[in-house]
Image (cartoon, rainbow, N blue to C red; front, side, top):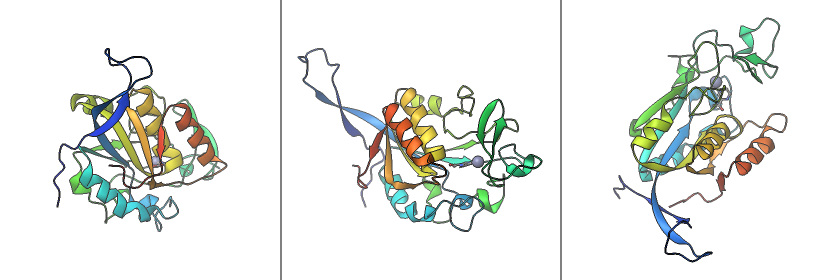
Length: 232
Ligand code: VGL
Ligand code: ZN
């Protein structure tokens, strides 16, 4: 088995002083793999199942072996979280309302702290993670992105972690492509990381055109939508 603890990737950049305009030089950056919310509740049989969510587990495990820096996120809601439809009188999953000053979709009760649904999929090699970032734990606001609460300003701490480890690029995989993966990718790109989403290792929910909207938002933010399953 190959040991790739410090594997780096090559990317093009064009800011080298000795280069004439139009020339490029390959540079090497450290890329982190961010595995978003690969938890039981987002897999078939869970409370908020993403179709075929479990099917990405083998590929995600392979990517984890190859990654230089390994991050898992874990949706981690307190009982009665305001992102749950059940927390709002008369509301149903799919309705939209204001939570923490931000309009969002209401969901079934899911990923409650400490419950089986909040655990990582049993096939995921979660022990390989360098760090686990929990999100959605604040009682007054939801968090889709691995980097910020849904107010887009309160940080999770992941940016600081990645910067202090010298990470310049982020590859994002997981669930759900059109919710937490997309929000994480857009924020990563805005924070200045060379950002790609490895589509073969994601699955989406796709309600009311959310997949098309998320794809557009990621492209506009400069996220690379990577259709290869063997990125390195
Ligand atoms: C997610 C809905 C609610 C996700 C989390 O991980 O994509 N979606 N909470
Ligand atoms: Zn959630």
